[in-house]
Every structure is written in C-alpha cells, then in structure tokens.
Length: 233
Image (cartoon, rainbow, N blue to C red; front, side, top):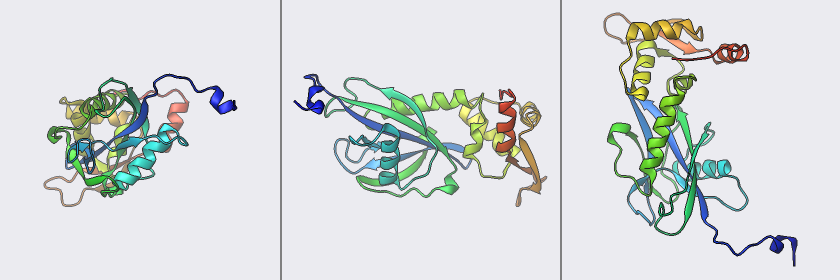
C-alpha cells in the first residue's frame, strides 16, 4: 500500500468551490458584479463568479483563477468572507463554498464575459435579479460584512477614484450603511482623522460652489495605525 492510499478513507467527500462578491461604487450607487451563466445548472440565470477548486490549488488561488476566467478581472485584493455549507445549496451534489469579497474602483477594471459566461454586468444592489444557487444569501452576508467593517477601517476609499469630493465620500458611507449621516458632523469627523489630503483642486463642471478634491493618505494611515490609531466612524 502506498503512503497516498494509506490515508484514503471510505467517507463521502463533498466538492468545494469558491464564489466571489465584487463590489464597485458608481453614479452614487453601490453595485455588485454578476455573471449570466452559460451552462447548467441555472443556465441563463445571474450568479456570482465562482467555480470548483482544483486538486493543486488553494481557495484563494481558485477564486482568482475563476474570477479571471469568467470576468477578465485580475490583480484584485480579496478577503475571505465565509464558508457556506447548506446541504442542498447545489442541485447537483454536496458542494461547500468558500467565499471571498473585494472592493474595486470600477474605472480601474474592465469586466468582460469569459468561459462558461454569457454576459457580465454590474447591478445596483437595489436592482439585483433573482440569483442562482444560494448566492443571495452570500451577497447578503457580504453586504453585512461591508457595513460593519467600514465603521472601523477606511475601506471605503477602495471604491472611490484617487481624487474625490467630501459629498462623494459622504454619499458612499450613507449608501453602504443604509442610513442618513449628518453632513457637517461627517465632514468634521473625517477631517479629524488627519488621513485626507486636500489636493488644492476643485471638482470641474460642478454647479454653484465647486467642492474640494481630496485623496486618501494610506501611508499616513498605516503610520498612525502602528502607533495605536483607531479609525471609528
């Protein structure tokens, strides 16, 4: 008996997949990237990008491979979200999904339909269609994670252009948190962190008084964090 065969046991072995929730912010709305499935099951239905893990790769490598294969996206920072294990989540057989989520600037990435994908499209969260498998539950979990994390880490800047206005930042936070935030208090709080840089420029084409353009000083934030700084909205 070889060493490999010595550790093969007679137990059912579920398949394992990865699924990716990709968030983007555009036109004042938080959006998610979905694919239209080109294969069964759920042929023609919208779903999150995802696929089966190969024997020679880990979960993150699989998620990156599948994301590039189905949408053309690559070199994206992703964070593990949750593992979904409901028994009947896939109509084919027992499948466990390790999920990831990412925040991207839409202008930095051009998503295109790839293998096993008919169409790829950004949907506003208020307009997400019926999803295949248990992907609605995955998306809901990702939204809650994002809502919680944005309160204690400045991850919202990952969704904005390099230069942004305070009204754009305010709108982003209101959209993610799904609540109204007092503009004056929000501005005062954000500026008090000392991690925003006034570029000295204003937004072009704005009506009335043009708002200032800011950028996020990540180096300053990292330095402050090492000294015990705590970001809390």
